[in-house]
Every structure is written in C-alpha cells, then in structure tokens.
Image (cartoon, rainbow, N blue to C red; front, side, top):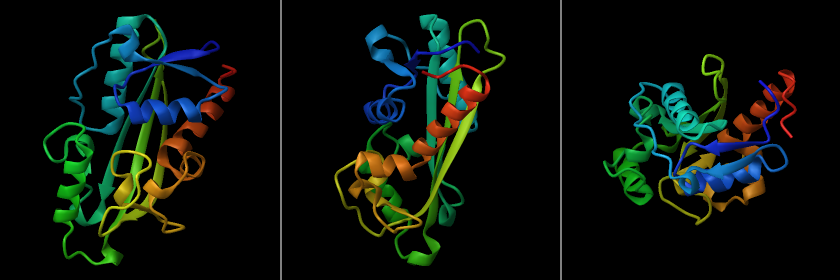
Length: 204
C-alpha cells in the first residue's frame, strides 16, 4: 500500500466526517463524498465489517481514489447486542438520532444501572484502487453503559446517553479532544495510523 495522503470518506454522516477529519489531522486528508456526488452503498452486510467493506469499495470504484469507510454501532448487553448494525436506523428512520435514543431508553425502561452495560464498536476500512483484495481493516471498542436519560449537546448519535465505562462521564459532555482519547473511533484511528506505519505507507 503506497503512501496515502488523502482519501474519500465513504459516509454522508457529517458527525463522522467532522470527528474523523480531526482525528486524522496531519495523517490523511479526508474528502467529503458529497463533494464528488458519490452514491452511498446500500448497507446489506450482516456485520459492521461487511458494511464498511461495501461502502469503501463502492467509493473507490466511483471515484478512483483511496476511500475510508467507518461502520459503527452501539451494542447493549441487556438487548442482546442490539441495536448493533442497525444503530443508525433503530427507530426505523435512518439517521434520526433523537428517535433512536427515545426507542433505546424505552426499551431499557426499568433495567437497573448495573445491567445497562454497552459498548460502541467502530470498524474502519481503507481501500485503494486496483487492490480491493487487501484493504486495511482496524477496529476500536469503547466500553460503557447507557444512562437513564439524555444529557449534553456535544457529539452526535447516541452520545447523549452513553456513559464512559472508566469515568462515568457522558460522551455528549466531552470535548472533542477528550472524546477522541476515549472513543471507539479514536482508538480505531490510532490503530489505522499504526497499521499504515507498519505497512510502510507513511500515513503523512
């Protein structure tokens, strides 16, 4: 894998774009797929990795450029791992964070704090043109639990109800820097940068 200085982000989620641009600053410059009028891949996979692969490969084929995809999900133990790969459309309306949070809290109504353990999981796939057989795949996991009510206005998605497992602090109350140190996405990005270094890609 040759030196990669820029890549298309295969996601139309502005929150992911904002976070990943900040986390990858100085390593890889991300291009918004909407700037190139790319069509997002349909997420038909049965796992985060499968969906991430689908999105990355679709962006590579359409753009002819390296592409980075992020498929992330919230896994709640009391719900058998749900919403998982359906996290963004848990309430039926893709990307409606408020509706997803309302449904999650309703589904956990009456579940005591000790049984509300959960984790964010992020899979990043970096694919390059003419080499789809060897994408770079990394993962990050953020352990925590689900709060009984939403708080905070930072971040996006389920951040207002996710409590960091070590500090107990709500993700939506964290600064971007603090969240980047703790989060599944931050962990995955750091592993991506290390993996690029091991491959001799010189991610700068």
